[in-house]
Each structure stands twice: as structure tokens, then as C-alpha cells.
Image (cartoon, rainbow over all chains, first blue to last red; front, side, top):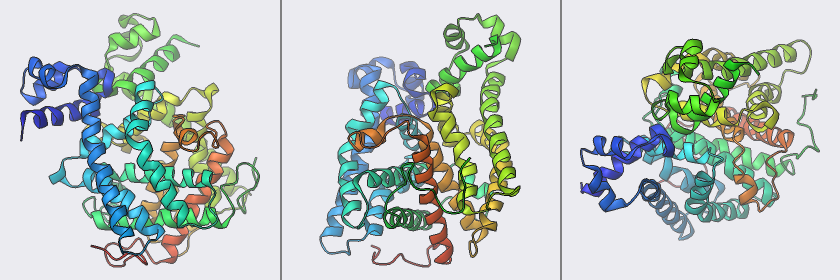
Length: 222
Length: 222
């Protein structure tokens, strides 16, 4: 591993735990067993280091997503399931596969994605809007009857599930008393894809998410 | 507002931004415009303050969830949609309604829920396992054919979507170029409930999430 990679790994872990504001270059230097001057030499200030950490993983994820979409269009069946698989597999396997070391990024990305501050919104947009819009187009193309705005919501639901599946927290194992395994990546992704595909088709078939006009059946509202 | 509430609000914001490790009692005191001695007087150490912040919101959420379940069983139709509404409405409206001030908790709870460290796992379990198991039972009771372990996965998917909808990040507005509104709480919850209900029923109808045995249709695996 290069010095830069060691620093990025350490920074990723510290930023995942403490966010941008709570993290210090000193804590990152300690974890990397490097000195702060070296971090400044390679990455400049904390802001640049944060962006570099976020960029490294998001670029890898989005390249893999693009490659999977391209592969799908080169001959595999173009289905909603294949699109969702291309969306989720790169993130879930990054977070869950110990060999790829993405568990800290899993926590960092939900922290940034749930932030309402300018930095979080800007980074999420810069790193994920282009790929999001591509997937929104792909989902719409294979789901007749789904409006653009419902497609955005379905995409956001897919991403929410995907992010929650990245972090190997052991909670599904816990709640199922061990029946679900945290390391069964294929089963986790396949199940998520089926669930999201059905939800998406249901929204399309019902003619929309509702937007305050329709009620879901059987549930009078207060 | 009491001094304790002012301190809890400030602590919630700092913990949401910087996690447990990155937050300092000094930063919390500054935000609360209180002195650190007062924080120690009311809450003891940082660990206790963190738990108090988490407890305040999780108790309110879970009481509201329980009340909604009880109301459903007292006479409203017992449907999967009603169960999911009882699960999601308390969190989403807490996060989205500016008057309730839960936007910071929205970010804190995803940070804790995505943590693999002992504190995060313990707090999530202590605060949310009992209510999770109740909802898992309720979902299973209204969804014929759903195995226990698939119910846990569907519950986890519901929670993932619910958590993602708590934080008013503006991303859905962004990606839909303003067509989706971040403040339309009823539409957001109704749409999520329909989506999750359809996903859950699809898993039940297919006889399970797959667990590596079945393939989803139309998508040959590499």
C-alpha cells in the first residue's frame, strides 16, 4: 500500500466516526502512523483530504456501476432487476466485503447523505448526481407508467436500502437471532433487488405515490 | 425551554455533526451558551449526555409508534399499510417538521445505526430492539407466506427508507428539479408505505428473498 492509500484509509475511518468537523488531522496522522506534515504535503488541508476520501470510493463505485450498465446493454436482458443490481451491487459489496475495506466508507456516506449542511449537499451532488440521473433514466425506461417524479422517489428508496446494507452492523443477524447472515452478500443484494423492483412496479401500477390525493387502501387517516 | 432541553438540543446538533468521538463537551457548552460545569451537573459525562440525547428522541418515537399500533388494534383496519404507517410516521414527521426540531436527530440516528462499534450497536439494540420485534410480529401477522427471516429483512428495508426520509436534505427536490417537495410529509410517508408494502408482499409471494437459491427473473448472473 502506498503512503497516500494508508493516509486515505486512516482518514476514512476518522471521518466516518467523527464527521468533517469532529475529525482532526492529528487523529488521522496518529491512525496512519504518519506525521501531519506528510498529510499536508500529499493532500493539503482537511477539506481537500475529506474530498479525496469521498472521491476515491465514489469514483470506484460509479465506475463499477457504469460498467455494469454497459454490460447489461451489451447483451444481458435489460430489466428493472438488472438495473437495480447494477446500482446496488457495487456499494453493498464494497461495504460488506472485508477484503475491499469499505465498511468505514459505508458509515461516511450515510453521514454525508443525511447532512443538510452546504458541504454535505455539495459533495453528494458533485459525486452522485450524474450517476443518479443515469439510473433514474434507466429505471424509467424499464418501468412503464412511472412518472419522472415517482422514479426519483423510487431511486431514493433504492439508495436508502443500498446504503443501509453497506454497513456490516450485525443488526439483521441480531433481530433474526442468527437466521440472517451478515456475510451472505448475494442473498442480501438479490433480496433487496426483488423488494425494490416490486415497490417500484407497485407505484407505477397505482399511477403514482399518491401526493396527498389518493389514500392507501384499508387505512383511514386521522 | 428548560436548561436541560437547551443542553440536549445543543448536544444533539454537535453529536449529529461530529459523532460521539468527535464531539466535545466544550463545543456543546458553546452552542448551548451554558458552561461545562452545568452540563456535568445535569448529565454527568459525555457518555451519559450522548445516551440522554438518544433516549429522549427514541422514547418519544417509540411511544408514538406504540400509540399508533394500539389505535390500529382498537378499531382501525389492521393492514400492512397501517402497520408501516405506524412505524414510519413518527420518525419521518419528527425529522421533517421544523416545529419538532428533529432534523439533527435524523442525522444522529443514521450515524449510530450504521456504526459497527460496540457503543452504536448497544444503543441501537437497547433503544430499538423491543419496538423492532413488535413491528416484525405485526408485519408477519398481516403478511401471509412471509418467513420470519424475510420479515426481518423487510423490516430493515422499511427502517432504511424511513431513516432516509427523516433528514430534510433537499436531495429529492434536487434530482427532480423541484417537482418533489421536501415539506410534503403526507405524500412522502404515503409513497414510502405503498412502496414498502408492495416490496414486502412480493417477497412473501415469491416464497422468500432468495438466499442464493433462486434467481430473479431476466437477469443472468455473472
